Image (tube, rainbow, N blue to C red; front, side):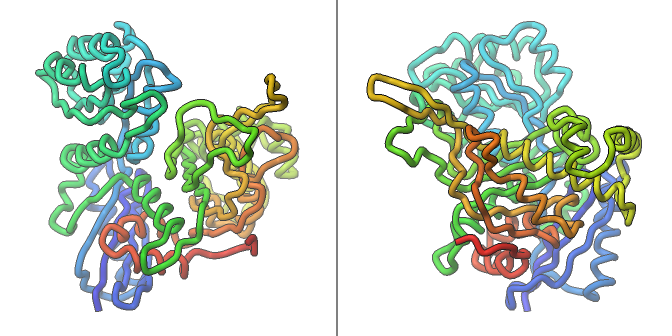
Amino acid sequence: MKNVLLIDFGSTYTKLTAVDITNERILGTASAFTTVETDICEGLTNGLKILEEKIGKTEFFKCYACSSAAGGLRMVTSGLVPELTGEAAKLASLGAGAKAIGIYAFELTEDDVLEIKALSPDIFLLVGGTDGGNRDCILHNAKMLADILPEFPIVIAGNRTAAAEAKRILKNSEVYVCPNVMPKFGVLNIEPTQKQIREIFLNRIIKAKGLSRVSGLLSDILMPTPSAVLKAMELLSNGTKEEKGIGELVGIDVGGATTDIYSVADGMPEQMNTVYKGLPEPYAKRTVEGDIGMRYSVQGIVDSAGFDEISKISGLSKERVSALVEHLKLHKDTVPNGDKELEKLDFALSSCAVREAVRRHAGKISETYTMMGQTFVQEGKNLTHVNQIVVTGGSLIHTKETEKIARFAYFSPDEPESLRPKNANVWVDRSYILAAMGLLSSYYPDAALRIMKKELEFHGDCQ
C-alpha cells in the first residue's frame, strides 16, 4: 500500500488529506489552525495528531504541500494599455495562483512607486508593448522601480526588444526575463511567465513564509493553493488518457476574505452574428474578488447586493441584517453553530457572493446594429452552455442548502447581458479535497481524477 500525505497551509487552517494511492481512496482528512504568526510547525503538528486519531498511525510514501499562508502569493503588475498588456499581466498573475494587490497601467509616477514600495509585494510583474512595439513605457517603469531599490523580485515579460535593457536598468535587483505575455496584438502567451512565478514562489517565497522549517517532512512544496485548485479543476474537466473528465465547468470557492472563480471552458461566441471584443481569454481562467468574502470582506457583499436584497433572500428584516453584519465585522470567527438567524444570513451572503463573483468572471454581450443588420458584441467568456459547477469553501460545504446557493451562479433573465451558465449539475467538495487533488495530479493524475469523481457530492441530472 502506497500512502501519500497532502498538506494545504492556509492562512487560517492547515488542511491535511491522506490518500491510499494503491486503492485510490481517501484515508482521512483533518485541519488545525495554521499558527503562521508563531510557528507554522505547531499547526501542522496539531493537524497530524487529529489525523492520526482518525486513521491511526500511518506511514507515508510521499508528502506534498501547497500554501496560501500569510496572505499567499501577493503580486503587483504594470503594463501599457489596461485592456491589453495590463490585462495579460493580470491573467498571468491570477493563473499562477497569485493575489493581485496592485495593477498599474501606462507610465508609473513617483506616487505609484512609493505606493508599490509600501505594498511590498512578493513579486512584481513588469510588462508592456508587443514585440517590436512600444519600448518607452516598460523602460520608463524599469527606471522608476530601480530608483526605489526594490527588495522584491521582478519578472520582465514585455516587449522582447526592450527586455534586456530593462534588466540592465534593474541590475541591482533580483530580475527574471520571460517571453512577452502578449507578443502580438490580441495574442496571449502567459504560460512561461506563470511557470517562472511558481518557481520564484518555491525558491524564495516559501522561505519567507517560514515553510522551510517543515522541509524535513515534505517531499515537495509544489505551488500556491489557488494554483493547485485550478490544476484540479482542469483535471476534473479535461480528464486524462485513461479517464474521462466531466467536461467544461465553472468552479466557485467562497472564502472568508475573497471569492475565487474558475472556469475551464472555451467561452468563445457561438452565433455567426456575434463578434468578439478584447483579448481572448485562457481556456483555464481564475479570477479573485478581493472585496467579496463571508467575514473579512462581508461589507463588499453588502455593497454589491444591498441590504434590501440580503433581507429578501434571508427572510430577515433589514434592521436585523444590518445588526448581524456589524457583529460579523467585529467577530470574524463567528459561525452559525445552530443559530437559525445566522444560518439564514450566511445563506443570503453566500448566495449574493456567488452571484456577484460569477457575474464578474463571466463575459457580457451587447446588441448593436451595422450595415449588415443586427450584430452582437461579446466581451469575456460565454459560459451559458457550461453545465457543470464545482463548489467549495466553508459557507458552501457546511450547509444543507449548497445546491440552492450554487443556483445563484445561473444566468438570469433580469440580466440578459451576463453570460453565466443557464443550467448545471452541481458538484460539492464536501471534504475540502480539491487543492489536495491538484497536488496529487502532478504525480498521479489518474488516481486524483478518479478520487474526485468518487468523492465530490453530485446534484442534478443536466445533460
